[in-house]
Image (tube, rainbow, N blue to C red; front, side):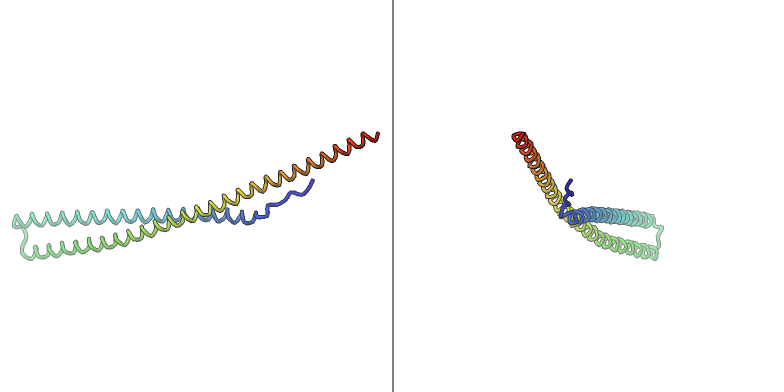
Length: 165
């Protein structure tokens, strides 16, 4: 039996499979990083909401104390400066949130790039697999033709030998 031919692009096929697997792994990492950054953004936004609620509650508390006359002038000044510090903290938190939104946008872009790379790797692999299938069919067809030729020759030889007898 003749030696089976090896697909000449088998090495390239293996490389394309590895590229596709690497692209899948990279996409998974990018998706995990994006999810982590989104969770961090949500946490930061909840913190900001809590800060605003705390400031609002303090303003209400200080206003009520002022109306009842329970606060001295010095206490009012201290309360106002405390409220201003809370506002500054909220502004700093909002800036941090804006920065985190940029990080989330960058991670989203990374995910899109990773998806695009996976699509390309998948297309490259499918094209090579299709080529291999066509090559296998061609080899099978050639082997079948050789076998048919050998059988035809054998039948012809038998037929010629019968005529001689």
